[in-house]
Amino acid sequence: MPTIPPNIVVLTGAGISKESGLDTFRDADGIWSQVRLEDVATPEGFRRDPAMVHQFYNARRRRLAQGDIEPNPAHLALARLEREWRGEVLIVTQNIDDLHERAGSDNLIHMHGELLKVRCRQCRKPLVWVGDLDTGHACPDCGRTGSLRPHVVWFGEMPLAMDRINAALRHCGLFVSVGTSGNVYPAAGFVAAVRQAGRAHTIELNLEPSEGASLFHEARYGKASDLVPAFVEEMLSRSGNLTPGPI
Ligand code: APR
Image 1 (spheres, protein in one colour):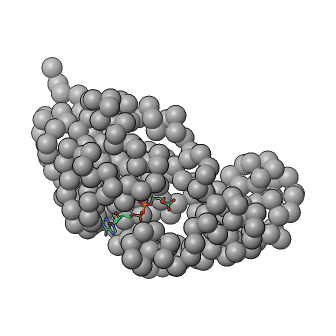
Image 2 (cartoon, protein in one colour):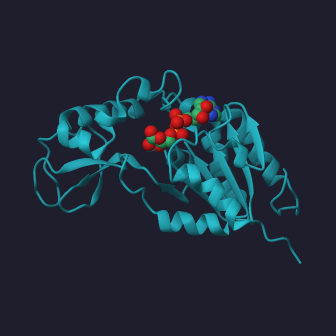
Image 3 (cartoon, rainbow, N blue to C red):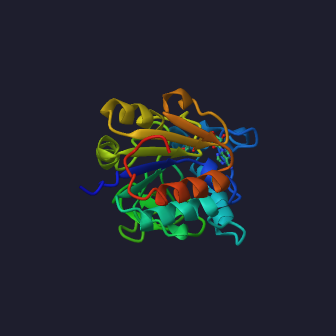
């Protein structure tokens, strides 16, 4: 009876993009040490000062568009795993950058939205948007001015595609967390949900122990661009022995 390879769910956070040149949030030099999240990542902040919020995301869009920002070996390794693993590989990213896509990952959910999309608060349709956005722009679909906002999930808002994510967590055989501090729910609760389902092996790949480190069966600490390619190589070289378990 051939071993059915388990489905894999990979949760990624800002740490996987750090070596590509993008800031994390809670490291000492992180984004939240530079600007108050209450001002730029909440609906209240946007209502209070939309221009400041637009300026914050415009700066991050410009940074992402710079030539030195490229997918790193960790992004590329996850795209390889998706191509070569015989079971399903789903990446659930908290990141709003497009580095997983640019690395070649297709089966991908941006649970916190996408930096290169905006949406109209009236007609609610996400639109690709790569340049600066300000309150003077009109929605290309409904024509309303000032109704466009970043297609990013702010604190206090519901993350995207949670039904699909929860189903994948219940049915996976392997859950891997890469580059996240485990500070923000619901993503921080995924490992507990997987453990409760009782089917999957769980691994944390991070620079340092996350808030939820004790909930993982296994942990490896170091840089994502070292850990993730080695992990993917090990997974793909497990001839036949594809059942989840200590790698
Ligand atoms: N390799 C691996 N891990 C790294 C690296 C690296 N090179 N550099 C940093 N890290 C780790 C840090 O140790 C930390 O545990 O990545 C994690 C980044 O944590 P955060 O900055 O809190 O980012 P994240 O977990 O993605 O934040 C979750 O919070 O502010 C919200 O919406 C925002 O999506 C974000 C969410």
